[in-house]
Length: 372
Image 1 (tube, rainbow, N blue to C red):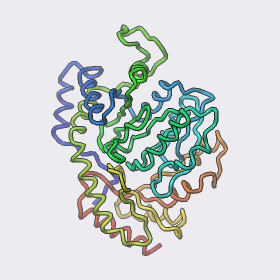
Image 2 (spheres, rainbow, N blue to C red; image 1 turned 30 degrees about the horizontal axis):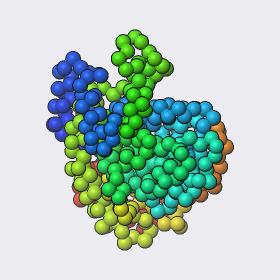
Image 3 (cartoon, rainbow, N blue to C red; image 1 turned 90 degrees about the vertical axis):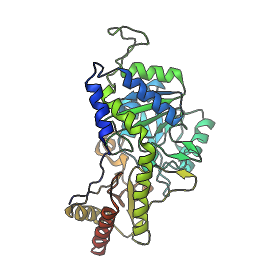
């Protein structure tokens, strides 16, 4: 039996919604696009939502809409998926990394101001693994220094901090819909903002630079084909309608893991911080300080050999080969990120993981740890 790291939760409702679009003449730029955007904006609580073909595209277009350009700097975290930093570079700007808070694993607000220079135009905080802790403090710093905030909320659909939803803290925010996320559209993303100018600019940029009311062959600016089809949107509409159910399922899986693993002193087991309504994206445990990177990697391999999919969420972004080549980063530049990264084990986590499967994963992990 294979226990998968992640699996989408697709029912006949989603299948029928997609088939309904396929039976229609509107496969792209049709009514499902507007319906999905409006439903998403209503759920998050923003004025506008702009659907795009990925979270990465959403982050990139947010940079362009905010006129972030070569010579500018954007502060972000080195403990994230590559797209957070890559989107900054795609706009020609430079990512300036700030090390993480070892508790939340998010960017450490106390260290941000040291990274601000006259070239800084924005802060891009990542709600890592669905944990929104610290977003309020990042906002305070951005406001003090008149900086835009682009929330990378790609892992945080449904999370909230002190009653305020992830995606409503920033000037702009972006969600992602890859199949391992809380909801999926196969591929896709969503840009959120309360600013009509920024939203209209993203609508134009995602549609090859066409202006509002322009004809199909009239292009007001350089743009891109980052559109999300009505096929994807139809899937997203049904998935979004089930988000509360998905959150509850994922919370239950997290609770099962916590109950079995909490007393193992070889592990740091994630919990929900005070004030956080956490929409769990993944379940990542950390090994105790005595474990080396090589030991962690051997544990991953041993788990995989038992048909249990696991992963190392996330390697440090600043030590990715192209980052080292372009910016000259070295081991030790961001010690907390590096220490956490070498200790992480992402365990199987999805809506329909059973209690018995969680028990098998935990039993296997403990047996492997006993041998290491």
